[in-house]
Length: 122
Image (cartoon, rainbow, N blue to C red; front, side):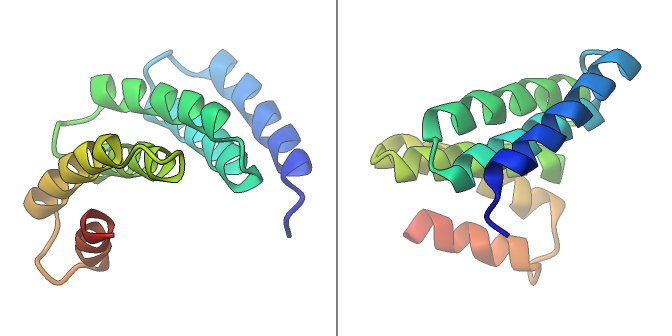
């Protein structure tokens, strides 16, 4: 609906509960950070989006297997922010990391793999 401030308000309430209820490296906590990062991204605040996407990534990197699709999602999100900030070489670096995971973790006809090719190409 475009009300990013309201979305952030609820995502931050979610985060406070998650921080109290879960261990610091729980994947659900990473999802909370990811949601906040997405809201900041949609709002156009790329530096804040990057901050929260990186927090999500750090948790996922510790908590998940190295070929988990959620880890690839984090790489994609970080790549997307760098692309929109005009740092195309950095974006490509993260898109390629995501793609390597998707190639190992997903079937060859999975839509996320197609999106990954598009990200690298675009």
